[in-house]
Image 1 (cartoon, each protein chain N blue to C red):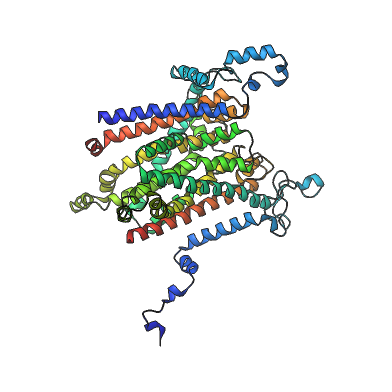
Image 2 (tube, rainbow over the protein chains, first blue to last red):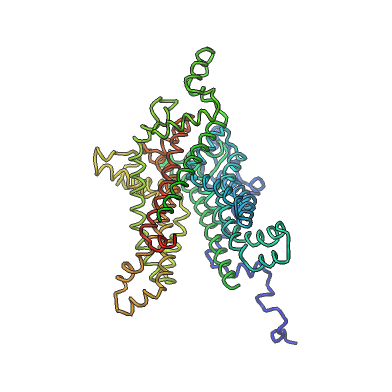
Length: 299
Length: 317
């Protein structure tokens, strides 16, 4: 029997693996952005395994091996910086800092912010007022200023400290987003129905409210990750992110700033890496959000 | 309406108190003894002198007592003295407000002047090539941090073309044209992201407004498109724009720190950074509280402006 005439047979589109279906809906810019994100994440994770990638902290000129501010060559694809370190290697290792910080922020935001937000949005009342008062106070600080103050006062500045501080500070905005969503979800019929049949509150929270808050939170996380990478970049540019010699894109731009007259490329490459990564996160995040709003409108 | 203002004001005061306490807590609980900033480590052999200085600065009092003292002074405008320069924190802040304030105002003016036409064009031709170009451009601009834009502007407009000075600040009282020259590049660097945010807001707002019945009736009366766009459609959108400008003050304040650092401007952000590097706790505390205060007050003002401009909210209250 011809499958095309059989209504039960899956259509051509549906038979393709879900990932291809997903990708086929993307506009070409979004495909490009998603590919870039995959490349940058892969490079950051497997940096130690990339064959031929130089040591990011190796200063060739100290050993009579290479010079400062070299232009691109076969040994240094993007040239060297003003300490004769390989720019490509520093960008790849710098990606680790940006992505770790972003991941920490998203993780802490989604887990803690998502939980507190869903909880207070669901139970409301006094708990809600108390938690939101704390959230409002933390949000009353301009982000970068609070971050600067906390990071400085902590004194130590390794990746763990930076990631934890930024992660902690990203809990409040997630709490707000989760609460707003939980409020509207708690008024939906299925929650009323669950209440009516006497389901325990805890089950309603974990089985009904949180699973429905999560997708919105994850779409927000994409865009928030972009904001966090920009924040870390600014912090690093001010010389207040991870201590040198660990490379970070902002640190690289700041170091190259001094020699802008001599060689502009060491400033351009990390800037491009930063801008493209942030743009990609924004682009894919916006696309996911549009996809989701179309879906919820169809419900 | 009166009760609305009253609640807002009570909330404002409560937030300010909480913010100041939190800052105080942060500065005081975290490692690092202020005595090290007051007396060089080598000079700390003299126990008696150290004890005297500790007592003088009240370093041994319980924290709540010190907070109470600090708050009592702060309410009267005295934020204490810098540990490093021993000048009054409040006068340092006052000295630097004009720079940061001007930078922010010029940035908002630049951004609104650019974003309104872009957003209007984009919404008017929704879905067209032009719209796609503007919206795509806005999404890209949103990804360019101030320090990258600033460095690019310095390289192109100061180093290559020589139109503007790369760094430094001329006070407006010294020379108006010199002042404009020094504020242009920093303000443009800050504007990149702001323009993107405002353009998106104006566009999405106008797209909804243009579908309203009163726009249709204006059209059917035969009014010109330009007149409808700017006189009928843009007016309600200006409210949203005011809110977003207000909400963005926090982002902008953070941005000024970076831009003042990059362009070596003697503003509040640069002072905060210097204080951070010198571990000048009093200064860090004073500036942080001041900046948070400005942010909270501006947001409350935005709410109140909203109330005055939009009669619907007044009635709903």
